Length: 249
Image (cartoon, rainbow, N blue to C red; front, side, top):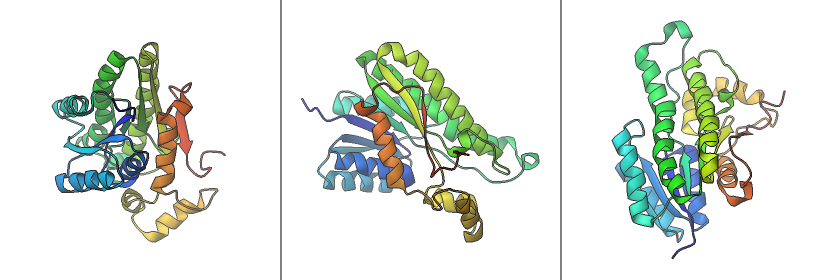
């Protein structure tokens, strides 16, 4: 029986999720990657296998419970267990003032960021509590602990992710399962470019980071791997903020 951990990553096809999947591949973990673009998913699984690790792509929309249930079931059917789950699927939504938001925009953000995290944890926890061990890492944001103009829905969704993380951690602790979150600051991804809209706004945002730069996805992947690992075995219900010092003041 393999001793390499089984890792499931939602939102694995781009940005932080992709960097995390490749990092676990370099660790020789058994990796299941999930998303909604089959060609990209299969290509990522191939890239992980090229590193010498076992990998599978399973399509899932995290806002649909049947998709999430099947994702977890197929992961366990393939590898026999689930050790680490990284819930990285999410959306930033359309920027604009509160007065311009609509129910449709709300649902687009909250279905991906909050409902998706909730459904993922629901089925991941069922598997892990039955095992008597496991580790879940949700992805929050610097915006999960502060406000910001014109991104109210994204901010609210990440506050919700942090609340879900803490509540689930208390429920899961008696079963030997840990639940934490990593909250990145600005990270050089396509989402950051969409979020800032243009180079000038991006430069202004990064000027407010004490380290004076964006993070890179691999730096966040390193934090995720630490939180998910036995090296953080006494950590649960915590939010690890990795943001270049942005929330230090």
